[in-house]
Image (cartoon, rainbow, N blue to C red; front, side, top):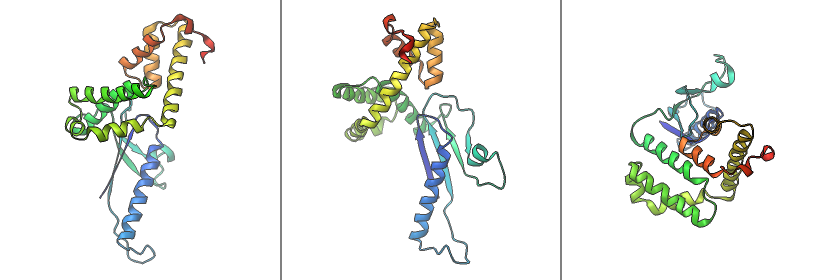
Length: 220
């Protein structure tokens, strides 16, 4: 059996294509190891598969299964099928729930860090808060140096650029909605929905952007 799992903080149905691609790559590697002949008349023995999408974002995902056929071929029985189980915020239990909690805390902290010192502080704060909440405690305590190194690599130039652009989009949205005189609680709800933010993280953006001089419509 091949078990495939992909963790995503942003939602896209295109994930099912990637998982299907991973499966066929893995299956072909397995067949090569077994020296299976795909041109023979004997049906080859291929491994079964279980596919999962671990969605760590805040968007409300109502479905529990992601289907390649349903999403892209309208359920046509003559078209290919590949399915993955979706584990989202409503999933409870075990290490998966703890991993989701870890990701939520990391997402709240990561975009605030700019300097190397702030980045290191963000990594340290994430680990400490997770341990205090009981998320991945044994792993974080036993492999802390390795975890810190991996988390720091997430601050690659590409990742930092993406995070900075997202931060600017959020701030631009806040500025525009304030210019339109939308109440603060409605602005908070709007950016939570649009950018998959936690309520605490959304409030941090509102507090940081509270200067009326920044509420300009051309912030778009």
